[in-house]
Length: 227
Length: 413
Image (cartoon, rainbow over all chains, first blue to last red; front, side):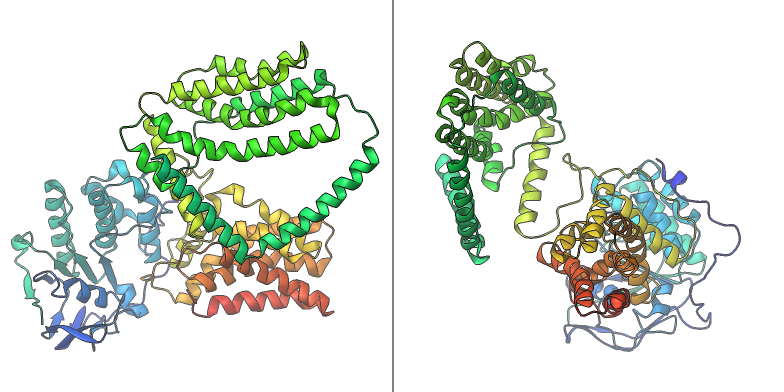
C-alpha cells in the first residue's frame, strides 16, 4: 500500500501545535570560546561562535578533530560544549530540540517504519506538514523508495531520506555531518540547492565536509584542529 | 570438517548441559523421570495381561497421512534446518551443499530417531505381538524430518517431488504383510533422503542460502537471549495487515500512531494476551506471565531522543496503544474464564503494567529472556499477592501505580 494512502492529508492552515517559538532576535546558535570536551578531557579549542538566521557554517578539519563531537554535543546527544545556547536554551533542552534538525554520518532510520512513513512521522513529531519533506525527497530522487524498508535501502538512499526529513522540517538550526559523502552527483547538486534554499528561508546550518562542495554558497568556515 | 562439526556439537552440548545444571534441571528431570517410571510400572502391572492387537488397517493410513502432511505442509518460507556458524562456513566452501547440510539434518533427525527408538522399545516390551509396528516406529519417526527436508528443498528448487509424495505411502505395504512395514518405512526415508540430496546436489538455491543465514541469525539471538529480528524467513519485514492513517500532525499523535503500527506489525503476538487473561483469572501468575512475555515483543520502539517532548510523556504515550489493545484482549480472556470485576480490571491493566516494567528494565536495549519474563510476571504476581492479602479489590490500583512509577522513573537499561 503506498504511503500516500496510509497517511491522512495534512490539515490546511497552521499546524495544530507549534513547537515553542524562539525569539527572532536570538541567534540560532551561540557557543562561547572554550574547550570541546570528550569524557571531561579537552579535544579541541573552540573559538566563540554566533550563528544567525540564514548563515551557513562550513565546519572542517582532519579526522579526529572533533567535528562530529561538536555536532553531537549541539544536538544534545552528549555533553561537551559549556555555555552553548540554541534558540536561547541549552542543547538537548526541549526548546533546543524543537529548533534543531540533525543528520549524523550513519543516518540511522528506525527499522519499524518505511521511508514514507518515516517522513510523515518526523513531520508530525515537529508539528509540521509532511509536504515539504516529501517534495525534497522527490527532488533527491526518492519517489520510488518511499515504500521501502530501511534494511532494503543503500547507505546513500538512507542518507537521502534522513536529509529530506531534516531539511524539509525547516527548523531554525540544521546540523549535517558529512552529508555529501555517500551521495551520487545529481543528489549532491540537489542537496546543495536544498541547503541554499534552507538558508535563504532563514535557517542556520552547520555542515561538515572534507571537500569543497559548499564553495558555491561561499559559507563561513570554521577549522577544527586536534588540540 | 566432520571433526570440526563434531567439536562444535560437543561444545554446544556442553554449553547446554552447563546451562541446565545451573538451572537445577537434572535434579528436576530425575524427580519427574522417577515419578513417570513409577506410573509406567504401575500401568504395566495393571494392563499387561490384556492382549492387544494393533489394527494396522487403521494405524497405517493415519501414519501415512501424517507423513504426507509433513511433505505437503513444507513451505518455501519455513526452512526445517537450523545452521550453526560452522555449518555456514562449510556451506561457503566449494563442497556440495548437501554435504554441508548433512550434519544439521542429522542434528534435526536425531531427536526424532531417539523418540522412535524409545517408543518402539516401550511398545515391544508392552506388547510383543506388535513387533512389526514397534520395529518400524524409529524408521517412521526418522522419516518425518527427512520428508520435511526433502519437500522443502524440492519446493525451493522449483522441482515437483511426486516420488517423495508417493514415498510417504510406502508404509502401507505393511497391510500386505506385517514384515513389510519396516521395509516400507525404511524406503520412505530413503526416498526422502534421495530427493533432498538430488535437490541440493548442484548449487544451493540463493533463497535457501538467505533463509539459512536468517535462521543462523535467529539462533544466535536466542543463544544470547536477544529478541529475534523482526523479519520473515526470507529476511523481509513482515507486511502489516492494516496500517492506520496518521491523522494528527502533533508529537503525541505521531507517537501514538507509531506505537499502533508496532502493535499491528505481528497480529499473531496479540492472541497470547487472551491466554494471559484466562491464567490471571485462574490465579496462576507463572502461567499468566508466559503468554504475556510473548506480547512484550510488541513493545513500541523507544521514542527518538530528539523528539520535542518530555521523555516521560513520550514513554507514556508510546505505551498506550499496546496497553489498550492487549489489555482489551486480556480482559476478554479473563471474562471468558469467569473472572470477577476486580480481577477483570486487573487483567485489563496487566499488559500495560508489564510493558511499563519491561520498558523500565531494559530501556532502549533490546531485552528478552529473563527480563521479559520478569516484567510479565511482575503484574501477575502483584495481583495475586493483593488477592492473597485479602485486598484483591486494590489490585487495579496497585497495577496502575506500578505501571506509572515504571514509566515516570528513568529506565535502568
